[in-house]
Amino acid sequence: MNNNKIKVEIWTDVMCPFCYIGKKKFEAGLEQFAHKDKVQVVWKSFQLNPNLQTDETLSLNAYMAKRKGVSIEEAAEMNTGAVKKATTVGLHYNMDKVIPANTLKAHQFAHFAKKHSLQSEAEELLFRSYFIDGKNIDNTSTLLQLVTELGLSTDEFKTALDKQSYLADVKADIQEAKELDIRMIPHFLVNRKYVVSGSYDSQTFTDILTKAYNEDQQATSPSNFEVTNGESCSMDGNCD
Image (cartoon, rainbow, N blue to C red; front, side):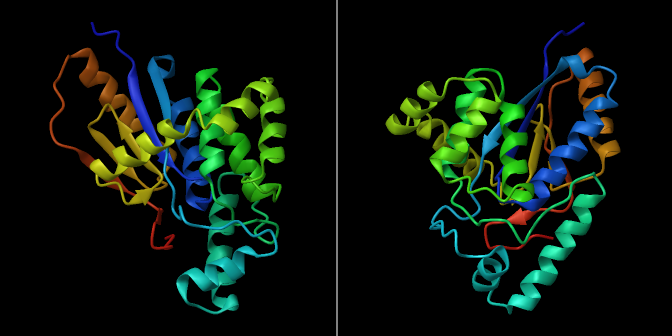
């Protein structure tokens, strides 16, 4: 019998609405998995818009309209679709409060939390802050508040941020995504074999985890990737 952990690597960006939805669906699927104690979850950094200059006066609708070349009304309609999807997993997005922000600092915060084995908790706080609380997650003060919520040292994080101690980790994740040709997020990679590209139903995650577990117990060698596609966001600004 093989006692290795089932490794689930998840590439996300805080500003991706389907990433938060996908997180909830994955967690629901994991909860239904009989061997969830055998699963190791590793969150990976991805930036949909690395060149974004944070502007607290810019609404999400205005940002989307400019990025996609559509009217404010059309952008609002696109965001309404994500809001409706979010309600299916118990999330209530406040798109009118969202501040489009560069997520580089947020990813460094997530890696800081990873050092303290609180990465999943950090991701939850980031998504909640962005989509529900309408906080600027590019603001150091906001991130320090989240550090406090995690019960970690604000001084330690401030020093790490000033020294960019986790920037290399963030960039390594992004480079790895390029090497794996990951273009859409959320992107779930299970045992380096099973891929769920996008936000899919919870049962799909349960089924894939079960399949990976059974193969692991039989010491079956991974073959080619098996891909399942769902709702996702891409670097060109499309979320569908």
